[in-house]
Image (cartoon, rainbow, N blue to C red; front, side, top):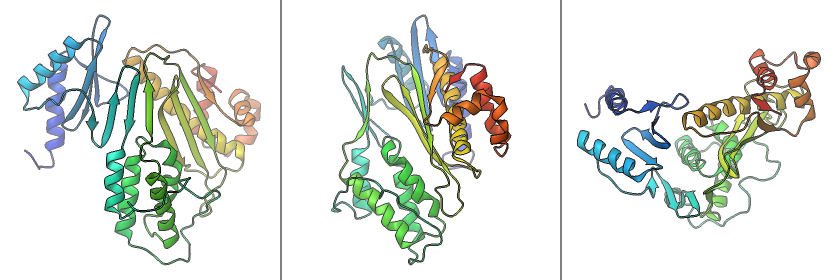
Length: 327
């Protein structure tokens, strides 16, 4: 079946059936994550097409799973996780470090930016990009290829997430000014090749979220951008930067919509923690820098100030009332 359209579904169905026979349960928050509990031990398996990473608190369970998979499928074992889909993983007694330095160097070389002069920031402060720019058009295929590579880098580089999201809005008709902004991100990466994410061992797993938004910063549509960061203890585990789908009529509305987006991520992460049998404290703190947003989530009297917000965002009030999150 290799190469046929039905191959991915057939392979996933075959693997899913086998894992269930072996006593695994599919994670309710992520269909590619499987867990198996035996007393206090937890075996975790993460599937990405035909690449599989797994680990357990008990080494004998790891060896059992490796032998079981090799007896059923034609698979090769590469030992302790050190490189996976462009991710470099360094493990020691103190913690785990994720980076993409090797992928970054290959990317800079592919786009002829390996000899570029480094800059200190991924984007000029106060940068305003528009689709109606009068500068010449550039090669669309090249521009899209550069954006695609940068999007993959954001797996371990939250510091460029906002900048990549900004330049990614102009893939339909990129202009010279947009390409200059993209190249600046490459120059910033050139000077920060070794940056990555550090996850120390033996820390608390308290989930904490931070949310923010600009207001009408998109000069083409006057839409706002939501941003969020999510920590387990001191470790950054998720982040987002996305243009909002509706136009906000005030900073309060923009911040409220951003908080609602972060709240949905928090609820998903709570379910993931439950499936992984990780304890956490409720309510989850969701930090804001806008007191009006906090007031709106608590006081229905302020509804007149938010009557233009789509109804789907008001579920944030429900989550605050039920003490799932605390702003």
